[in-house]
Image 1 (cartoon, rainbow, N blue to C red):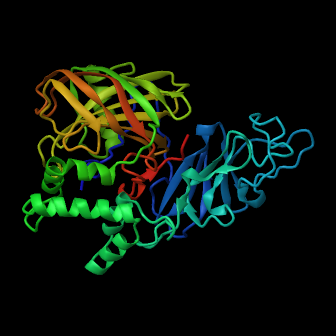
Image 2 (image 1 turned 45 degrees about the vertical axis):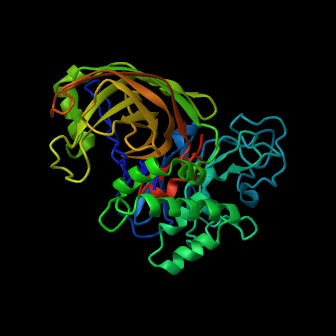
Image 3 (image 1 turned 90 degrees about the horizontal axis):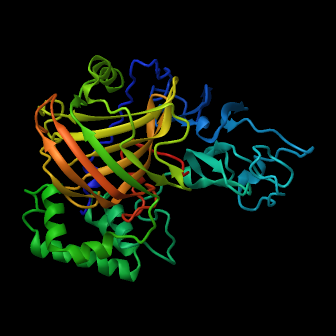
Length: 439
């Protein structure tokens, strides 16, 4: 349907330049066999999930990974004033006794459920979670379970109750898992009366106006484009959710050379290119702004900020289906690692011309911007753009492999937490991409 977002590949290429930066080797992403097994690797808390090791970086909240029995947890705080550490009491839920006034000292004092730490979601009693980490709430009353990964629900029941029913967007997400008409009918029936009417309005409009584009001979791209053009009111009513942005990002960039972003493995070959030719490397930030609770972009603590533009799939040999594009990346780093978040912006193709582009990923032909957190050798998605624009002021040779110049700026690119976007919760449509805990 109206989803440019889900055709976008999230590419994370962590590049190192000759100043001595290193990305330590870990088991993140490697195969594992025992689901739920946990271990620590430095500041990383690793969990065996879906047949591979996933990680949460405890350093993001100023903690280190420690083993609590068989569970890896982000800790480092101690008890104070003779208080008893009750961080695991009743799963850290909102029924914990309110904090006594020492919240924020990274010590679990009497009356606090936690203080500055994070715990494995699978250890939360009654949560039914299969993964993720829950960070301690700012008032120390318990753990924020936003970053937890829920267990598998059936397509029809999802997380809704019969009393409320699904929204039109949730009906559409439900039908995406169906293989027969009976399943589709059940999904529609599980929606509210209003949602069913909205969904049926979209289907009727698409059937009347986009039969060819959405038929057996069409593609997702042709169907999306036709539906967005011929049925905009019906699409907006069904797929738009009123939610506040997670952050606003600005841009002011000028690049004189594109690196090859389709090389493999990206984490080493891109660094080799940069060290061999730093003509395209911008030694400062090209993105700014804030996200979450007012956290800055770039992140705090970096000794230097590096930015580059890279050409992906320029000759269409890496992936004949995915069009060539240009991706811009910015990261801050210390001598030993990455300072989160990493910023990545992608253009819809490599044929870039001066003018204004939408950064609303629900629109066909838009650019996109994401915030990513580095977790060892892998990453998680923190935010995705669903609003704003970027103004391309200059562009040349953008379709030529190993060449190209590009200037652009923006005063406002709206980004949203993946589970709270105008398109609803998109975390289930991101493939193997892990969603970061909300900051």
